[in-house]
Picture 1 (cartoon, rainbow, N blue to C red):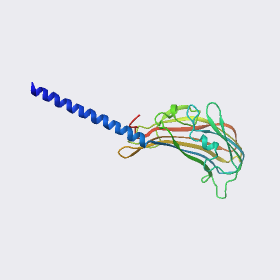
Picture 2: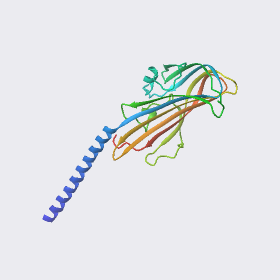
Picture 3: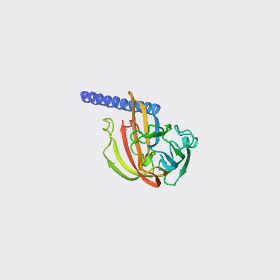
Picture 4: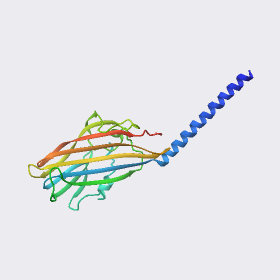
Length: 243
């Protein structure tokens, strides 16, 4: 009987020590994750052309979540987006389904040496920190995208999936407005990209992310709305250790 009691007591002590260790590590991991967690967004909008453009008006989606919150609205409103030429005017518009930036440009004159293979490119950009954790697994529901998002379809990922994560990739469409005059052979492209990233330190630096972009190639001049193709990759990198 004493031997049985000793065995039972030993097992109880082992279970108790294991439980305390697990709880202690979970608390440590949770605190380390929360105190080191930082989120950020990297945004670009690029207009490229191989020919002169005149009387240009563009409406391009600004990344935002379902509630209209955007990481770059404040930067556009304060005219703090990097790369905007002095002659360009930017104004934000809320369409009810998405937020768009209206870009008005008197003319775009590419420099000497511009060609179809080497177009004249202007890139607007912003890097913004996030006050909260970014949902990198379900950004369609909870994070900024170029909205409205339509025809969302699963596709193969462009790059080799990270061994630390479980990326899922999609194609989608959205709308861009472009009104300008140009030669019939002009090649114009409008692209926007967004990457949302979480970083933290738990037994070494780790991160996860999602990335999305839209692109619209146009031949000749254009006067109206066009459908831009979008791409979304979610769940890139490490899993969140604490949710």
